[in-house]
Length: 250
Image (cartoon, rainbow, N blue to C red):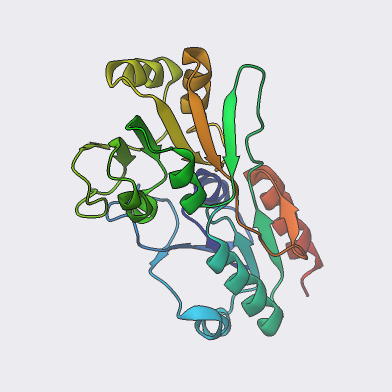
C-alpha cells in the first residue's frame, strides 16, 4: 500500500518510524521544506510543495498513492484544505492526524485570541519583554509594535523577519524541559509569552513554566480545518487506520 504522509510534526515522524520495514506498506513522507536542516527520517522523503490542489492531485496519481495521512502542523490550514480537496478529486482515502489543543489549567493566565494580529494588539502600548514562540513566518506581524523587546525562539535564523530595535534571538527546537523554560524566562525577565495553541507534549513545558511564574500567556487559536475528514489523535491510531484500509484493499 503506497502511503503519503504530509508531515512536519512529531506525530508524522512517529508514524514514519512505525512504518519502517512494515510488511505491506510503502510510505513516503512529505515536508514543506521550510526547515533547512530537518531531522533525518527513516523513510523516503519528498521536500517542497506540490503546486496547490491540482499539483497534489497529479502527484497522488503519478506516485500511485493509495492513502494519505495529513499530519501537518495544526496551523497549516492551507495544506490541510488542499489535501482534503485533492484526495476527494483523486478518490484517495484521507485521515487527519491532529494532536489535541492545549486546554487552560488552574493557575493559567491565558489571553485567548483568534489571530496573530489580535495577539499583537493584546500586548498593549506599554513596552514589555515578550517571549515569542510562534515560528519565523509569523514574526512580521509584531513589527507593528516596535516598542517591545522580543525574545524570539525559532529553528531557522530570524534574519530580517522582525525589524524592530530590540530582538534577542534563540535558535532551538523541541522537545523542551519545564525547568529550563522557567530558567530562561526568569533570566530574560519575560513579561508575557505569546504562542500558538499547537498542542502536544514537546513544547508544553513553556506553558507550565509560565503558569509556575504567574506570567500571562497570549494563546492564538487554531485556524478552521476541513470538518468532514476522519480524524485520529495519535500515530498508533493512524497506523490502525492504515491497517484497516490495507485489509480492505483488493
